[in-house]
Structures are given as C-alpha cells and as structure tokens.
Length: 241
Image (cartoon, rainbow, N blue to C red; front, side, top):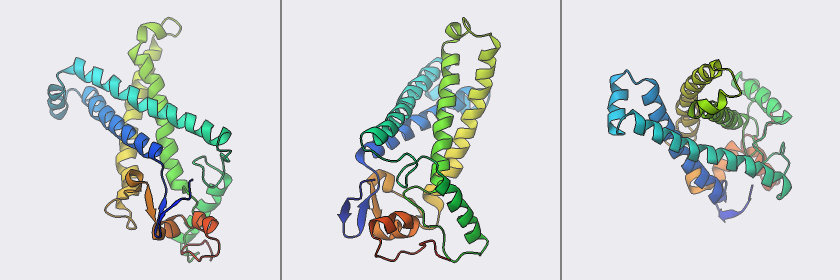
C-alpha cells in the first residue's frame, strides 16, 4: 500500500487504478446480474418486463456477453496486478499489505472468535485487509473464473463439443446458473453488508470511491497496519488482551 498521507487525518487506501477497476467491475457485474437473471428466469413477469426493456432475448443475450467481457477484463487486470506487485514492487504475496491468504489470517480468525466470545477485550489488529475482506474478494474472484469458463462453453458450444462430450454443455449450463445465483447472493448480502451496514461505516464506506480512509478508521479497523506505520502511537484494537 502507498502510505501517503493525504492530509493530517486522511490516508490513501486505494489507488486510482483500483478505484477505476472497482467501478468497471461494479457496472459489469450489475449488468451481468440483470441480464443473466432475466434470461435464467425468463418465465417470470419481472424477467419478461426486463427482457422487453432490453429489446428482447437476443439483445439481452448480447448485452450479457458484453458485460461478461468487460467484467472478465477486470479479472485479468487483477491477476496481472498480483504479478506486478510481486515482480516490480517486490511485495510479499503473503505479506501484511497483500490480499493473498496467509497463516496470519488463521490466527486473526481465532482471535476474532475469542473477541466475540468475550475472551478478549479488543478485536484483532487487522492489517490492510482482514480475513473477511479476503474471503469476500477471493469468493468473487474464483467465482468469476468459474463463470467465465462455463460461459465460454455456452457461448461457443460447437467449438467445445469437438473436443468434449456434449453433456459438458449441460454441466456448464447448470454450473453457470447456480454460480451466478450464488455470486449475486454473496455480492448483495455479504459484500454490500460488510461495506455499508456495519456500524463503523454506516450508511456507507466510500473509500473505494474516494481512495481515502480517515485516521480513525485506519486506527480502529486496520490497527495492525497503523501500528506498522506509526509504531509509537497507541491504536484501539491493538490486539492485546
């Protein structure tokens, strides 16, 4: 992370690239959800209404593939970012500023459970990304790859059935549909809930759009990172019992 201080009480949490990718992914995912669910539940009245607004099933299918392309471009860029982070920035993939899972997340999870059970007086001192944020990210990242692969099979069945049995198309259709439903549930109820409904940031955490995090937010929600940046300052939730 760039630890640049934007003002006395603000720090940079997300770069311009990450904010832009989030907006593009948000638009792409929303478009996929609307078009895909309309096609998947085409027998329902709301789906037929959406299909009419989109110009019919054929146009809805075209829009679905368009949103799929721009969304998967974000997945590719994120994959390239990990390569850039490791090779150019010389960052540790399992280090405290990385989104990659590490053994420290297991420790933080245990500490968090202890805090919930009243065995600790402070929550864990999370680093730049908590284990919850990593689970949220990787569930969607892996899900997008699953949907991308199955989506390609459904988009070009003639090509894939030259090398695979025909029933693979049926398997791809089932996996694609249920993974899509699961992704929408995770995105709406878990991701949005974590970023808007938790008391510390209600009604919304806007740092992914502004790139800024307040000093108080950094000290309380990412105390481990704050302690690395300012080890002589005391921070709430420093992980002590």
